[in-house]
Amino acid sequence: MRFMVIVKATKDSEAGVMPSEEMLAAMAKFNEELVKAGVMLDGAGLQPSSKGARIRFSGGKRTVIDGPFAETKELIAGYWVIQVRSKEEAIEWMMRCPNPYNEDGEIELRQFFELEDFGPSEAVEHHRRLGEEMAKNK
Image 1 (tube, helix red, strand yellow):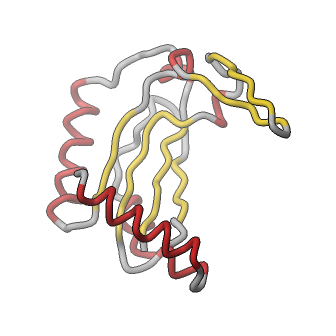
Image 2 (cartoon, rainbow, N blue to C red):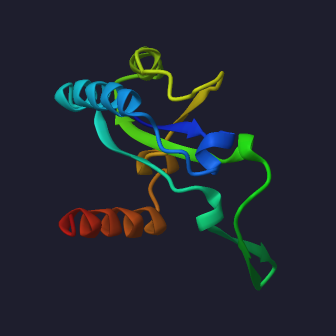
């Protein structure tokens, strides 16, 4: 099972405040544990929403909306992608995570859909082939 672990944004992260050296070291140690256990597939911090954009879809029309975006609690400051045997294992790992906030906060765990969840179809096979091709590009 793959999970995305979402670190929610804060006023500091949206202001571009960089983590302290102590926090970077604690996260590096935690990430090393995840990597050595074969759990971590990817992870990164994200730039503030002021450097981002959204594309709004309305029927066939697309509109670009430049950041920053107002609702900090709805924004993402970083993420991990982990692969574990169960939701419980994902929770166990993330309970060991250093607190990524200088205040109260929360991280969110969301399980990925796997192609097998959709049942057999031509579209699923197309996605499978694309996945194989992306793997070659790594």
